[in-house]
Structures are given as structure tokens and as C-alpha cells.
Image (tube, rainbow, N blue to C red; front, side, top):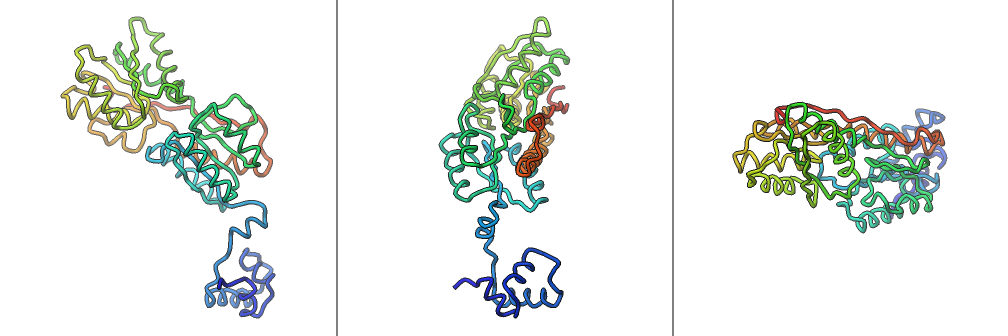
Length: 332
């Protein structure tokens, strides 16, 4: 039978209220009583029922974070930032990976709702879906992470991906490259579409520059390797590649240099996106557009906590970071 708080109180010779005060760290209990309560807890093996306590208090100490792909180092860094900020206020983060699948996302959301999480941080599988409305109707606060919206009342934390795409392609054009390939997909993904829009803007500013699009089914190393293999076999290869994330760029780099003998950056300059930890350790260190991934996670939690306390003005609900180009050997 589970040990209850009244059992601890009886063994320690104090009231249930005194045990509760000790468990909650209140300073109104004498040191002698605190010592007796802690000794009773140890002797009986009492484990506090946080779920019941949270239900009584009306708020859980758990925050849900659902990302597209936890295997992507970018989202792992987002999670690190969220966990650190949440822990500072006594919250824990429950992590789910949707795989960019709407059904899997809904499954996680249903499970987290059953656990009565305090709020949800979400990179939506479908940016045009009704997930925000459904969470709001259930009374669950939500912050969109690495996503944008035109709805002022919705909290979002994102990066200017159009600017990031522009920085990447403007950089290789400044290095004298004129035939640029964009590798990424699906093209309907908001982040991919924005990075492509930035690339097109940079191309439009330079006479004689051209952009081709090589769409991928996923943003993975394997998808990048497949795209790189197609490029390797061509006689009319581009002289620069901008990959929509670093995993794709690593795959392209593997296909070109390890399998095909194409020189990077001599034959093809290469730029990625995200600046994951591994970018600087590739066989040719990778030039990349850096996103402040941990800051995205910590800022999302901060917005959620301020939303709990009613401290957010409409103008503060949407935070957008600027990306930064980190130049390494792969772009010459």
C-alpha cells in the first residue's frame, strides 16, 4: 500500500499541514520538526504524488515540446535551450518528435493533454492547420517554435529564413560563383520555401546569375547524398550549392568528395543552414547560416511562462531572430 502524507505525519508526531509545509519548503516549521518529518519520509519511503498536487493547484509543472525531427541536431539544440529555461522555474520538458507527420503530432497532443501539461511548444507539421485553435479551445497555451503566423495573438519564436537564404547565396555570388543549385524540400515546408525565396532574391541582384532547384523528399543526410550523386554524374554541374539545412549539405559533401572526386570548394562551393555542431568537423568544414537554436528554445519557454502570468503585450508575442553567416572552407 502506498505511503500517504498522513502516515508521515503520524510517524513524525506532527500535523499533516506541517508535513506539507516541509515538502513545499516553507520556513514556518521549526528545525526540529523538519528533521523529524524528513526522518519519517526516509523511514517510510514516502514518494510525493506530484500529479495529484498539480491537479489541486490547477497547473502542471510539465511543458510539452513537439518538434519535427528530434534526430536533427538543430531541434536537439532547441530542446536543450527549452529544458534549461524551464528548469530555472521548476518545470520539466516532455519531448515528442512528430516526424513532420500530422497524425503523429495529433497523437502526441492528445497524450500531453491527458497529462494536463501546463503548455505546449510546437513546431507544427502543418503550418496551415488548426492545431493552435484546437489547443486554445482546450485551454492549453501554445508557443509556435521555428514558425511564424500572421495572427498577432499567437506566440511565436522564429528566425528570418528569407534573410538566411539571401545571406547564403549572396556569399557565393560574392565569391564569383554564378550557377547556384538550391537543394532542399519538400518545397511546401515553410522554412524551405523562405530560404529559397531569399536565395532567389540574391540571384536577382546579380546579372548573369542563375538558380536551379533540386527538390528533396526530406531534410536528411541520405536525401542530400542522393542529390549530390545526381550532381556528381552531370557534366553541366553548378559551381555552388546552397543546401536548405546542414544535414543535406553533409550528404551532398559526402557524395561529391568521398565518392565522386569533385573538389569542394574548388569545383563546387557549398553552404548549409543551421550551423549544427558537426558543421565545423566535416571533411571540409562547412560554411553555414547559423540559427540561435538554444535561444529559440529558451525564448519559447520564457514566452509561455510570461503568458501564464499575463505579462505579455500583443507586440511581445512574436519574437524573430536574425540569422548569421558563418564562413568556413567549403565556400572557398
